[in-house]
Image (cartoon, rainbow, N blue to C red; front, side, top):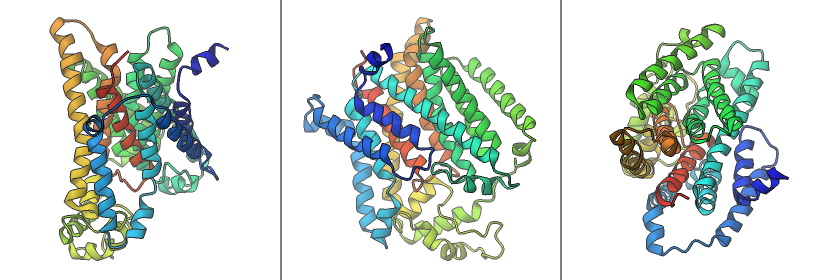
Length: 409
């Protein structure tokens, strides 16, 4: 009964959001959680009692409106508009997540609920994914991931999803009071699960970004903490890798992505303003690979590349300068405001007064580091053509709305 009473404190749409996030790592025949999220989000928007003028709405959401508006315009300017529309189907749940959070989160407790939901969903997805590929007997990790038929993890580097949201777990760990030991335990479980998943699938990017994220989170409080904890995280990751056979250490050399990036760059130069069209990189990859001076028969990986293996080059190639600018605005605005608010209201004040303000700023710091982890993953992997990339992006932007524009109760 106590659980039911506490559950009633949170809007139905937030429970629908938690259900949908927990379902992401499962290959469901019918996407019932998404339908529930859609219905409850519409209901929450209609029931929202928040009075807001058009000017206030634009001031708070103009970065999202700009990104969506430019994406629609670029889609209709695409060589194949219909295909580009289908290639961006994952934007539907991502925008629903944004609307659900913005419409329902109006105080610190509801904001905290979303952090916990993301953490629990990540833990479930990570355990299920690692268990799946562990049971598949095949020497090649890429093949094992594909055979798992997991909708969230298509290639090994997709564990970047777990790494990108793991800083939110650090926020929960330091945010929760000591009496809430069970939630802290779940947070620690998710952090360890993310680390194990990155090492087990031998993702160098995920492993490196995990260590860097841990370092950055603690460095915000005390630089010495960041250095010490970062070293501990690195040693832990190397120890896990050794226990699992040293596969990550053996792959330390860089993946030869140069020819893929140069093909994307040539594609961008061919239409620098709005690009070739969302999702069309793979349709022109072989053509622009030759223009970049590479013979298909001589490159190391002769597979058809479905994405540019760089979020920023993908934006340039498929959406041009306009698309990259829209992404910079979408992510840059909340990051700059978060950093400013974190320093001036939390960390800076705490340092100047000689007191710790870690609990007050933990969620905000975790969110800022999550943004940084996502952007680091974008250098050589993340794509807006994959579910986890778009969902993570809009979820972080939505959470920043709660941190920046809502009064904390």
